[in-house]
View 1: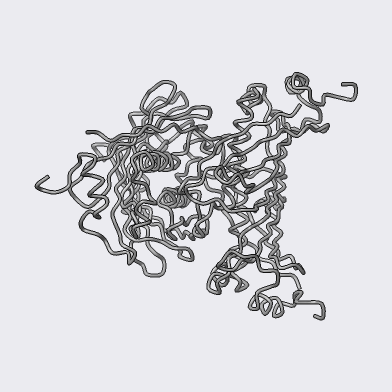
View 2: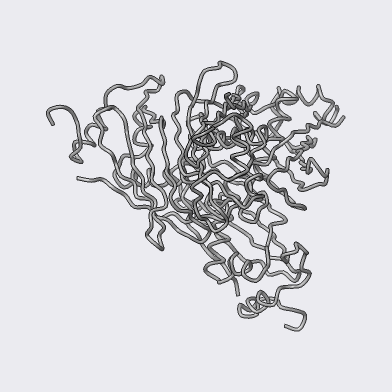
Length: 143
Length: 143
Length: 143
Length: 143
């Protein structure tokens, strides 16, 4: 089963740089928009972790830029949960120009689990494992 | 006595909008740069309050824009403490183009004092009163 | 007749500062969201000016902060066109917490008209005058 | 010869997110600070390209986060030019906590050359080749 959320993002005037295109750093925010939307839709948002004393900092981000977005454009951020065996949360993102449907950027983020003492958790937190199980995702060797 | 700090700010590529000038919202950040620099220089920064259980949210901001700043420019933010009788912190800002020395913007911010229960303090916190006294500022009717 | 647009804004994780509330500078962006939405709804957006060789920089901004917004909140930005006799564009903004309907901030922006040589226009551009007329707004002494 | 620039970056209050650490997207801006500083120091900045009708959009960005930065910290961005044979500009970045000298993040950016028609240049622009030659970098098979 593939878990995927599609999020509409409108390009703000202030997203655009002096070259007339969306500044490359803004895509990190568009990824965040997608990731938050995914979390809300699939009941696994940032506050679900926070309420259990877990923080999920981003440890890696990557973005490939293919086409520019300009002022007036809107974009679709497709956020896809990447199932991993390691105690991590990985998302892959594909951003489309909402008019032309062309891919404008792709990327990924990786998050880890920390407890409130900021210690790295080496296994999935129980509630997250439940969430994975419920969604037919990897939960251990004998799934 | 006038309390004033001058802060150098370099215009970032990402500060500039598609009109080729610094986006108006960035000046709020330049004010913050000035205010933080003032706080560090005059021993009254945000952490001095925080360590005493006081938060100092901004309740009003104003900015007048006179000239644009462009990429490659640097600016001087002049941050001036405005002495008030009310339990508030007010700063006035003048931003200069560092090359031409022309004024590019002026503005102000007003902050109030809240305790950790988010209750408004109607009088100056003691340590802030000490700070005002030490700097020859208003501390009460019989100063 | 009152011209008004209501815009839904979702608080992003990255909008929130270390005090756990939306950073005050973000409201400038929320005003922009409201203003752009107004422009699109009422056919008077930034590109309508740009296509006629007119730029409309912001020359004044004000914001009063009353209540915090936190992560997970969404807000409604009410953008109201303020009719002026001077060759300016003024908007007043009221931001509501979308859950409690409490006012969280109010503010205003003022823009002027510049031609491509960056000269200030002292009278309304003809197409904007037409727009005002069509909307029953001030267009001169004998309206 | 290694071309490298070290840039001091101060963490702004507004750089910090609600977890009390610098928001991961800000590091993209710190990379930009480093890259611009490099360009100014080594006479190869964005305006040098722009003046020759060349734009150099970022096509890939990567960042690994190792340690958090908090409010009050300052960081050193080390920007290193990565010599490539392909018609690209690559930088590698190492960000250090300026107090502890620990590495807080590493990353890279890749830029390509476009002419004013937004066509991809498949070979190095002549002035950039001159710059590479002057700095003892790769300029072709028979260097």
